[in-house]
Image 1 (cartoon, rainbow, N blue to C red):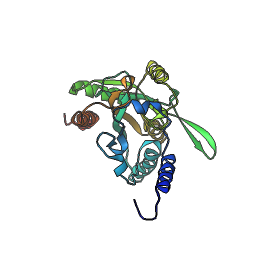
Image 2: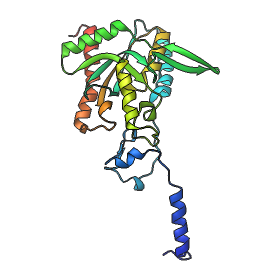
Image 3: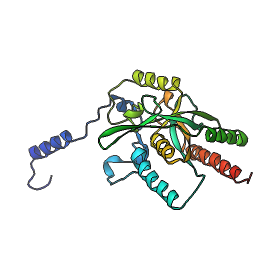
Image 4: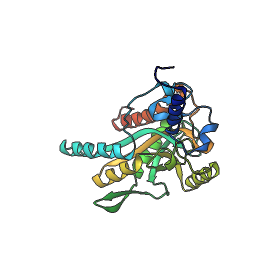
Length: 260
């Protein structure tokens, strides 16, 4: 025992410390064998959380890609580029698809399945179209058929403002709905044409539309959200999955340049 600290004082401090712990409003977490914090690259099964402390800053989702696009579009303008095609590639959660499937986005829809991006500008709500270039999507689909290496579909992509509650997940710090409600929502999304979920496509489509840039979104699915929220594939398999959009878009570029 440290000098000058009584047992009573120590017990009081421990009690105070416990009272200051973060409270998680999600009963589902207690049932999980491991909780993976994907964007921190940490997991309760592989890392000693109490022993770790750090400042981690992320760039993801609508705010980050919006900032990047504003400056990229200005760069393209100042460079006097013409006939520009921009393709977003990345990962996503699938709905009704096996992991590793690639989704070419037909329309980006919001969390109510509407093909629109809603933004508040000067205190007023502005709604912008999120349609993507139909011919470009078909061209990418044809490229996938030609390389014939993985399952590829054209479908709607749901773009959310958040990775956890906004996507109906059960593994966030807060979750005040049931698994049955989650599944009902995801099935409604599937029935509306949604095949994957991510967090960038809506503002990407809206800004490219306004700027006259042909655009497409190509994302691989890392899991089927109808079967769970946690990724179960091994690291090596996930690395291979993440290369699929790159291979497809790489083939598309070579074909456009007459290299295949």
